[in-house]
Structures are given as C-alpha cells and as structure tokens.
Length: 493
Ligand code: ADP
Image 1 (tube, rainbow, N blue to C red):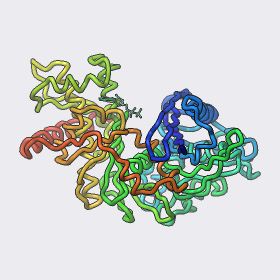
Image 2 (image 1 turned 90 degrees about the horizontal axis):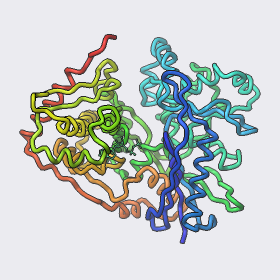
Image 3 (image 1 turned 90 degrees about the vertical axis):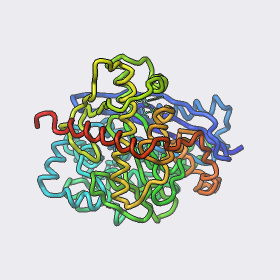
Image 4 (image 1 turned 45 degrees about the horizontal axis):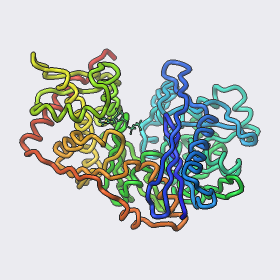
C-alpha cells in the first residue's frame, strides 16, 4: 500500500493525517504548541516548536500505524496563513518568533499606508484590505525592530516566509525556499494579477524581494524531505482555507465552502475571474494544479464557534458545545430573540469596529436555553450575510453550500442554515477538508489520483434541505438585520 501524509500546521496545534492510495483518511495525530503573548495585542509562536511538533506528529503517525517511510510517496502541507517567520539562511535559526496572523502590533504601519494613499493600489493588486492581519507589515516590523536583521539582509543572509516556507526550508535541509500561490496571496506584497511579488509595495515598505520565496502552483515539486534515508517529495502546499476549498472539491465557478470553526471562513471559487468586492470581501488565489490559477472570494465571520465557547466559558450556561443541538431542538418556537455576537466589532459586510454584542427581544419568560438557541442561530445568520454579498460581487447564485469545521456537526445549526439560506447544505463524511486538500494536491502531482477521483471520493454524510416557507424566512432574516443595525456604532470612536 502507498500513502500520502498531509501536515496540517494550525494556529493552536500541528496535525498529521495519513491518507491511503485510494484517498481514504486512515489516521490523524495532533499536538498542541505554546501561544506566546508578549504584549497586549501581540501573538507569537516559536518557529522551532512549530517544526518539532510537526515532526513529532508525523513520526507518531508512522509508528502507530506501522508504516514504512518508503511507502510514503508524497507529502502535503497546509498551514495557518499570514503568520510570518524570518530566519538565517545558513544556520536556519529564526531571527525572531513567528508573528501570528492575530497579532495587532503593526496597526500603526497600516494606518500610515492608508495615509500615504496606497490602500486602493493594494486592494486592486493584492485583493486585500490594508490590515495588520496580513504578512507584509509583520515582515517590516521584524526588519525594523529586531537587532541585526537589517545588517544580515545587507549580507544576503536572511530568508522570510509564511509557515509553509519555514517548514519546507527545514524539511528539505535548507535547500528549498518556496511557497505556493495561495499563501503568497495572503502576504499583501504579492500581485495577484501579474503573479509576482509586487515591487511597488515592497519598495514602499523597504522589504527586499531577495528575502522572499519562489512561488509555485499548489501542486508542484517543493523539494524533498529526507527522512531516515527515504526521500519523500513535498508535492502539495496550500493555505488552510484554500486547502479546505480544494479538499471539498470546489473546483468550479460559484462553488462555496464554509468552515465553521472559532470563526467562519467562506470561500467561493470564481474561476478565472478576479472579482474585486464592493462589499468588503477579499479576493484571493484558490489552489491550482497548473500555472493557470483560479481566484476566490473570501469572507470571514470573526465570532462563530467562539460564541458557543462564550456560552460555555463566560456565561457557563452549557457544559459542552455539542449540547447546544439538543437545547435548540427542545425549544419549539423562537422568532423574536436574536444574539448578535459582535464581541470585537463586525466584519464583512458591515465592517464596524465600534459595534458590540447584544441580545434582543428578551421577555419575562426568556430563559437561558433561548439564549443558547439564538446564539447558535447567529452563526447561520452571519453566514447568510456574507453569502448575500458574495452572490452580488460574483454575480452568481449559490446552488448549495459545502460545510466543514467543528460546529458543522451540529444538526440543528445545519438545518437552520439551510432554512435561512434557502439552499441545500452538504455535510461530507470527512470534515477534515483542510488536511485532505493538501493531501489531494500532493497525490495529484504524484499521479496517485486526479480531480475526478477526488470528486468521486466526496462522500456526503447528510444533505440538509430548506424546510421553511419564504414568508417565515424573510421575517426571521428581517429581525436579524434589525438587531444587527442596532448594535452598529455602539461604542465611542
Ligand atoms: P478551530 O479549528 O477554529 O479551532 P474547530 O473546527 O475545531 O475550530 O471547531 C471548534 C469550534 O466549533 C469551537 O468554537 C466550538 O465551540 C464549536 N463547536 C464544536 N462542536 C460544536 C457543536 N456540536 N455545536 C456547536 N458548536 C460546536
């Protein structure tokens, strides 16, 4: 038997997934690593701990399944996006911790970029809004603030990259400095039209192109991992959300997946069309197996599963996330209570950092279960908000929604999502779409399978069909819109 292993390097844990030659998921290993918070709003990871945890799960997977490394014919990598590392080209030592996507320390650099009038150029050429979330200002911060980095750059001794590049460089014994189009498209220094590093933005930020990796299609030869004498080619690389889109076989224009995790991430494949959103969505590059790339529109909900964690950890009205399903089902009618979890402001399509969370429609008989149910429904309403603008931006109508991520296990939520969208919601048997995407990309390059095989491998666990009338759907959604509007512009600017 031949195997592919996908390394899934996430924000809080590193995972390794074993996939057999037929594309079946055989086993998963997972290891958490440290989150470092040196200052308010700062979030870092130790790149060496990321690397060692990733190798540990890889080895655990081999040993607990008695796999001979010779039978691993390809390796895929998917990763937390935007998180940035700079390291010494010769020693491979990180020059600073990885600055994580959540880190806000570079907000002032972003303000300056806007003041200097580059916002429009950046949107048109990178598909992104100017934000500290993306890699560009993180690279700049390390160069400008860490002793000796600028000097080393002048001596041509520094390399930079997102987590995929960091892993590739180390796994290939410092031989290969690569990234893929999907990861590059999240840096805010990659031109998604010319498919090259953008010299105008780089020179404005004073970042030399020479420290950046070569960019390849997601299914490519990224080098070889020499493990105990076996040469394992690295043939699939993609940022986590694009990897999930690929893992769900969303290969055609208009196909959408939504990942229900801590936040929600919606991506729509828009094919060869590079749509620039009028409504605050991002334009990004989807996985490609050839040089001819596809684009995607992306919208995210900041607080999704995190609202369920809030019920559990702050309000303490549930013990586990999964019990929300039974609670929601136990309440027969609920049309007037809305929880808007705008704990940190609202993202697309509202983009109001001054909005705050609120509960609407409380009456004397409202109990905690009503609040649980309304909180669960807020995930579906926020998803609908994004799909509405995605359809407008892409000028396409959603046919069905493919789902994954922890909270898609909730049957009540999925049925409500289908009801409120008036579309089918398709839940796959394997909801590990992120890791599967990277594994599929690797296997395609190694000629283990092709896209048709991936499509035929998509086993549906359940299709949720809309089951409410349009009058009710309209009334429910109007109530949500009214609730959201009342949270806008809440705190003082
Ligand atoms: P992440 O990758 O962002 O850590 P996961 O995909 O593991 O997230 O999903 C975990 C999130 O989903 C948590 O925020 C949790 O509260 C929520 N969640 C998990 N299971 C359920 C469930 N059955 N119903 C509702 N929410 C759930």
